[in-house]
Length: 96
Image (tube, rainbow, N blue to C red; front, side, top):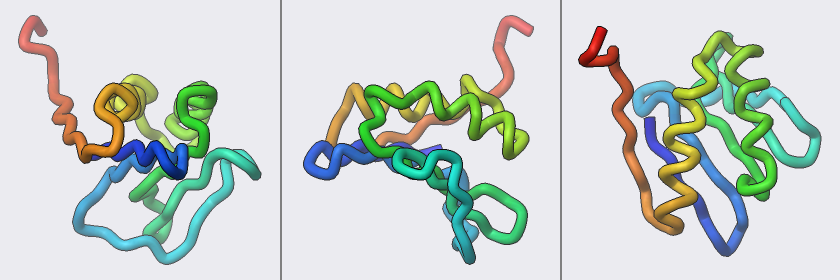
């Protein structure tokens, strides 16, 4: 997953797929959160004023069958490195 926080726009983009392109968008929150879809699959999440609205990501996760913590990881990384593209790889725990 990739995250990109644009400070000028105060917007966060989380790319879930690099190979699929959206054909429509779903609205999670009228003002702050939209999910780009390829058919029935979420491919990207847009979040405005993300520092104040990370609480919308668990809602996205539940609605689209994703893991909430997996969405929060690239969001937090992007907020920590504003105006830079961050890439987060999530796998199984080594301790498991």
